[in-house]
Image (cartoon, rainbow, N blue to C red):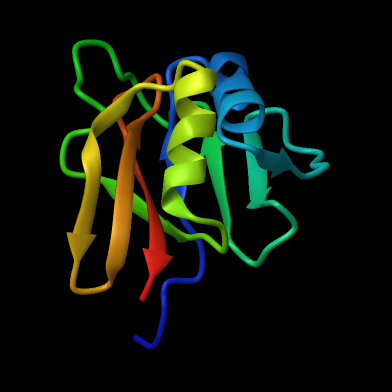
Amino acid sequence: MRKLEFASLQVRDLETSKAFYTNKLGFEALETKNPDAVIFKYQQGEASFAIRKPLGNLDHKELGTGVALWFAIDEKIEDLQAAFLEAKVSISGEIMDTPFGKTLNVIDPDGYKITFLEAK
């Protein structure tokens, strides 16, 4: 294998999650003919992923445990944190210095951890 081609997250409520990713995190939803999925890109960048209706029954299942998607950003992580706080996004912890750069984690409506990276 050479690379991860695409990622999608199964969500409990497609419209709630779509609103979170577009209105609170700033992702742009692409036009699609699939009523069971929403594909996103981030501020006209290269990152692309999807959310979709469940492929099976998700009752009594923890969705976000152990999953994290990382997105590199061009802006300062502190500015992004301020925007997320203003939008009332659930932030997990503080900005962290890592070997890769500064990171900030947010939690989506289904418990998925979304990590934003200001690379070194």
